[in-house]
Image 1 (spheres, rainbow, N blue to C red):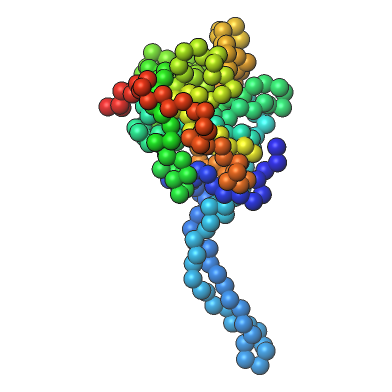
Image 2: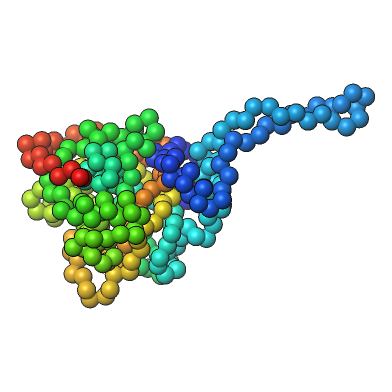
Length: 280
């Protein structure tokens, strides 16, 4: 799909952008404005510095993308592990209340296909605070339905940036499969088949955005061992799973975002409220 030429940032993590810039020697400081005027008698010119306006989000994003370059995978044809990933497509957004952000956690799922035809799923964990203008709010998603007991393992993965795993999902494939399970099935009530293709009927889900440009930092990247997993439903066909954190999501227009709270047939499901344990 074509990149978003004009649009707005649905999600922006200034902290992650600054950290990536610092780790990779990228200068995101304010730019200088220069003014030129003819010198007396028209010989030469006077050059003066004016104010130092901050870089826009778009300018910061372009500088980061340029510096990271090929380290950010796009076609997913190169073998794991990827450190960064970017793409354009549909982004699904939900809450994740068991992660390091506690009640402010946000979860993103993107699905794409590599150049060789391999299904690729990305599951990203961020913060509700990073939606500019609070476009999406925690109260938009009912806390109802199934919630994975692997929330603490995901929290450990995100907080350690993929360097620590002391959970029962003690290998990268197991934890990645569980992360995808959370992204696709969290909030289910009754038969999971009833929710396939209808994410707004699940608890914790917030919205999806079409034709969105995204950039992510990756913590773990696995290709599932053939024959090890018997995945069904909306997880069927999973082959490569990347788990990490979003840096930004940019949409073409406000109409690109479908907010589930505005759908009339969305079940409130408040009577089936089941709150997961908080992170200690």
